[in-house]
Each structure stands twice: as structure tokens, then as C-alpha cells.
Image (cartoon, rainbow, N blue to C red):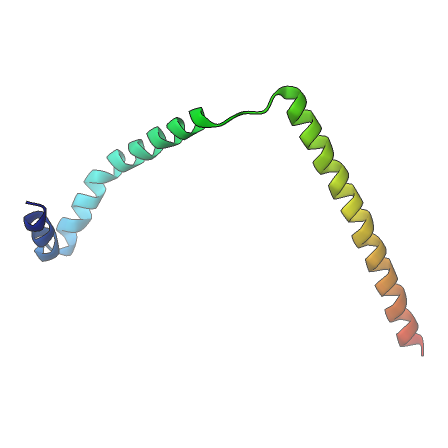
Amino acid sequence: MSEKKEVSQKNSGFFARAAAWCKALPTRIRDAFKNMAAELKKVAWPTRQDLINYSLVVIAFVVVLAVVVGLLDMGSSFLVARLIAL
């Protein structure tokens, strides 16, 4: 039976396929949200304290990297200025 359905879809015109796609769109959107909700129920959410700790680690890491990149930028700017002054 699926072969017949498949053949009929291949032989149908563009507008018939577009109408079928539009008709199935709300069902596909609903199914996507159902799947998303089911997956979110499986997530192991962190505790409030874990979330605070993880956030502090990320913020500290970003600050350290910002300082390193800033120092590298200042050093390279200094070297370029010295090379131009030659």
C-alpha cells in the first residue's frame, strides 16, 4: 500500500504536494513539541548550588582568557609599533 501512496505522490502535481505539505504541517509541529517536552523530562537538571558553581567557573575562565588575549594584543601592538618605527 505504501508503494501506491508513494507512486501517487510522485505523479501528483506541485500544488497537490504543496497542499498536502501544508495540511501535514500542524501535525508535524505538534509532534516536534511533544518530542521536545519528552526529551526535556529526561534531562538531569543541576541543583541551584551546582548551577552557581558552574557559572562561577565559566565566568572565571572567561576573565582569565580575556586577560591573556588582552596581554597578547598589547604585546603584538607594541611589536608592530616598534617594527614600524624602524
